[in-house]
Amino acid sequence: MLLADVVTASVAVAATRSRTAKAGTIAGVLRSAAAEEIGPVTAWLSGEVRQGRLGVGWRTLATLSGPPAAEPSLTVTAVDDALTELATTSGAGSAARRDAVLTVLLSAATAEEQQFLVRLLAGELRQGALEGVVLDAVARAADVPPAAVRRAFMLSGRLPETAAAALTGGVAALDATRLEVGRPVRPMLASPGSSLDAALTDLGTGVTVEYKLDGARIQVHRDGDDVRVWTRTLREVTDGVPELVERVRALPCSAAVLDGETLALDDDGRPRAFQDTMSRFGSDASDEGILLSPFLFDLLHLDGRDLIDEPLHVRLDALAGLLADEEHAPLRMPGVRSPTAQQAADVLDGALTAGHEGVVVKALDAPYAAGRRGRSWQKVKPVHTLDLVVLGAEWGYGRRTGKLSNIHLGARDPDGGEPVMVGKTFKGMTDELLKWQTATFPGLARERPDWGVLLRPELVVEIALDGAQRSTRYPGGVALRFARVLRYRPDKTPAEADSIEAIRALLAGG
Image (tube, helix red, strand yellow):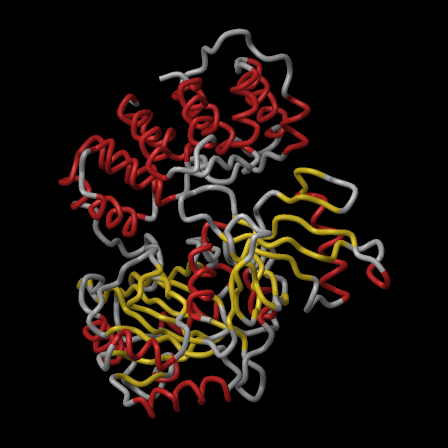
């Protein structure tokens, strides 16, 4: 298959807002791909490369992009081989060798292929093919049930490998995908709940109500003395969190896959600022003086037994047994199982009094549905908060003159299109945050009008709001009410931002 075929599909996917049309286009390309081409094609149409981050920036690519080729000749395999060479080249003289690989690759590409490769390698290829769309396309191309594809992806966490399994081995290959200790599973997510009473009414009495911490999601795998830790985006952070590794290594088991949260506490046991917790997950993890405390709330595997398909009450029983003794009991997320309405309210009050965000209400009969915001888990906070994508910022005035201040906010389009603008805000910004925005945003700009900057959709910000209202001003027909900035979320990607449907639900509820 030629790279030109993938580029043509990418253009077609970007040109439509229809989820069905996007999936159909991608499915057509995947059906035409040879077995060894399925992985790279799937990755590229998802806006990624199989080899992970290549460390290639816009400036390098612009320098090396010479005159384009007149006719398409690059094959998918040749491009993938070049990317593998880029990813594996290191040591003395590696910069020159990497530049040589890129020069050969780009010089063989047509103008359209060069544009595609530059955006792909710089991590800025956004054609509206979100994971859900690509998973639907894989199911269509392989003629297999979508549920089988999603489950295999949940367990492997690897979209290209899942696509290859589906198209070369069908349902049997997908069903053969198993949870593996040492390979992270995509985390199950909670949907926003409008209130504690509403969540209890929706899910019934067979629930557990647990604290919702203002921390970072972690998934911890133990295999003997080997303990590894991943974030919610499946980025491994083991080397930066030795205190978490030590706590899990001390548990009375030989193999386990644990789900939970971690955060930094002050001397009184109250949560420190979210930024203090996230400082331990940065590229340099420089603030080693801040210790993280783990709070575990789920158990997906224990000593050779997979629990991921078991109902939550079975998983919680196993977790309770693992953390039964006094030494390990503090690792358990606080909560109450099958509470009365008053007991549930007391859990929420206790969480808020302790300085946490709220609670999560979970159905005890639900299996672990990784990667999905299902109704089986509902998070309840006293203040509405949303994770939105920053689309732009305006130059301030008055005391904010010279600073990028009023930010434009977008909600995720569930059909894979560009984020849908739902409002602006300059409220809640400290002088330090204004300084950071002004220094950071120009490097993410895709346009620079006189009034400010339009940004590539890469940053996620957490917004507090009083609700939503109908609006003819914004394309989604809804706008935020009294939005204010709480913090930026470096632990989340735009694909994990709240959707326009979540904001419309606030409108319906208000």
